[in-house]
Length: 222
Image (cartoon, rainbow, N blue to C red; front, side, top):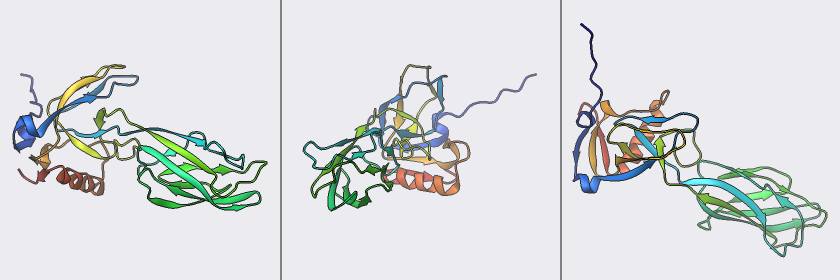
């Protein structure tokens, strides 16, 4: 006689919620890329909150140097417009302040030297030297808001927790799929949470802390 193994069910890990109309939201699972994207109940989800970055010179600059056209986006990057402004001009060089979209100073970028806070880019010198006030913008696009399994190495926002999937769902290759996730005010069992393969204890603990901020408490042995 063959042995059948029963899969995980919602009630195996979701132990309490305020109300399913409040604690849950409809989410969109990002389409599979090259193959279907299969997610399981209890899977920890991340949301795509950031897209690509584009660097550009502000019109009217005295200097004709350039900035990396497509800066690499880091985990700490925010959607919106970064301002890079010359504060210390110099012959064949200079220094630029770097502010994030909220106006927070991230540091000072030196011409010809890679800057790697939030974004990775380099300002290159041109034939005409930069003047004080010359500026560049780096625009980080907003993400799609779609979800997939949390990925602690991602830089598009999926490295942060946004909820837990209620029921198994599969997004076909090239097509998104609607699903439902627990996103606030609930108690869940640590035994039923589905983490990505290779997730470390520190990564799990950080994600559990993020769940707590959402009002989702993870209980051992629940």
